Image: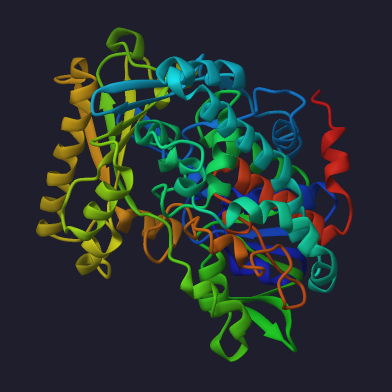
Length: 529
């Protein structure tokens, strides 16, 4: 197996050891390696890339977490520049077209169009009496977009500087992050249908409008206003291009490398201890394992600090999910499959139905999200001719799977398989209700559960978005690159927010904190060859 962990790695002292090969970890590794640092990335599982990896069954291939990315179609945008920098310009993007998201709510269809003005115009066509509220809403979204950079930039600061300047950098962002999405939009309009439509992309951060922070809602909406994009060659092209850059610069990535704990000596992180007893040492340690895993598990109880854990542990993990991976014996063109994503809702009452679903065991998710990776990827037919792929996702509480959590992957017994078959059929019927032409064309259909997510991502409750994006989450000052242990740093979506772009940018933030230099200056001036 390529990149397999070996105890030979203990013979070297590194500049930086990174725990986890998700987007934040790989971005940090690429930037540090390009800066001449000796980097080692340790990945627990046998695949690199976290939620950017793909898997195959027969003639088919699916991504597991990358469904679309915003802003990378804009060549001078910071996000695009950052992706170009960390991949040496090798990563290419395919535009999803004029419509990138479509919400179907109790049969009513609403399209989300590429371009701010086009989107505003489209919403006004749906709700002509609400023009003032719609314009005010998109003005608020724009305002959040203008303020979140300062908020997250503050997280590169050491604690002493944050205590003096941090408040002023966070203040404007707090005006929105401390309010719920519903309360902010309800202040603009009393039209509950309009509120629901404006919140139809809430599955991107996993919380209904009355529970989510308006900051995350605004950031997600703003992120996609100029359209959706998909990596050419599929999600694996992201971690493949990053791996190439890291290894070219002398960095090392090891899989099947299970870290037991971070070594702390005199409040200083000096290395990591592996499950097999090996110890590896570095000048700095970066955890891409999530805030809960880092402060509650990777740091031994002897060295844990209440200021890191007490408030953190009050924040719930984000939503867990089930997903069917569907392989079809026909092309996207033959089956008339869209590039845009579909958000299928059973009701306009998002909060009420979601609450009922979470409180009623074995109930059906009120939201089904459909993605069409083969239609989005212009290279898919080159690798998998004559086929097409779809994913259908629904929420599913982790505790409904808890009785099987200690069983081994793929060996959880007949009852578990029976439950999976029931869920699979429910999601297939949801798919057929929207795209009846695919019925009879399904060659492969495989279901993943929250236990699958836990197995591959190492999140305790199968959560896909780390910490839930509630107003309280954004108040946690310890969700920053530099921790209160010397030489221990965090990266990943927990220190920014959900999404591939945010996870990538967390790696930029962490690199700035480690290198103590203006990495963004270099990124903004980078030109692809």
